[in-house]
Length: 114
Length: 233
Image (cartoon, rainbow over all chains, first blue to last red; front, top):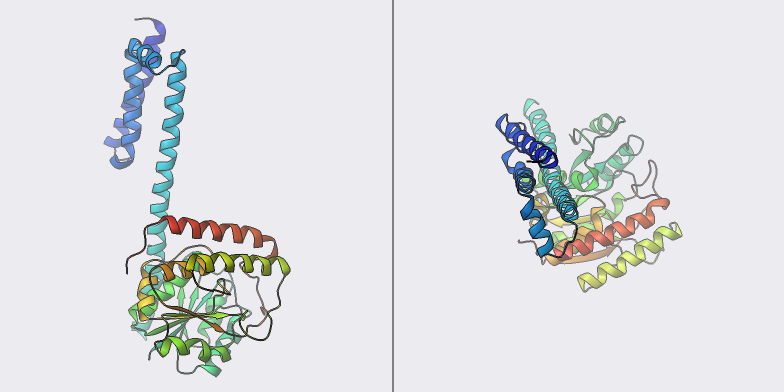
């Protein structure tokens, strides 16, 4: 195993470990972690088997295999950003409903006291 | 018929007392609720002095979220008619009767008070007027009926629309969007010519500088709404 393979495997392995550890400690909801887990597993796979990286790159017409990695990383970041936007929208909607509910309940309590 | 007048207010401590007095003078038959949208001034205290119901939102939700709170309040209080009446003094108590009539008589599900239908012209900044005209054109096109004043916040709705709006209501600058959404959901809309005042105090949520931004944003929101699936009733 050469140095580059070792380093790449080590770093991506650490990433998989980090994601799993965060889920285990309840710091990352399973629902939101699937994308991270999937992407770190993909990176880990390509680190271990560089032949498959070369093979896939050439198959889809990319002459320089690292470009394929960049492309994947870029796409992944876009996807996870869209995902975050949907999560934020959902949170916004829930937060709004809660705010309204609290205000309505406060008013109701005041009325009941009188 | 149980009628509720909903007044969304954000930092309107100066104008709110006059608004409440105006309503009381012309519409003693209606209940009033002020939705204090997280004001940083004494809007809430000023409104409470007049003995009306006040709902204090813990933080600012914007006009859409505030109005939806009012519709929820109307829904739970089993009101038959709900009226939106701005807290800045633009809307006139003596026009309430005209506005509410078509809804009360069952001729429409929603009545919108229009500044541009009556004989008297409405004075405003040119940029803003132009923005409103363009919006009116687009909204009319989308609704397949003439809407002269889609940004008017002076409107009355019946029980069915109260229920619909307490379930879902647009967030920012909701007036024009609500017209399109309600029309698409099959509600009968009607415009009523009304008189409005120049604002007394505070600053509009739409300043002259923001006219263009406002128009583009509302147009985009309407286009996006058209992409969404038709809301169920």
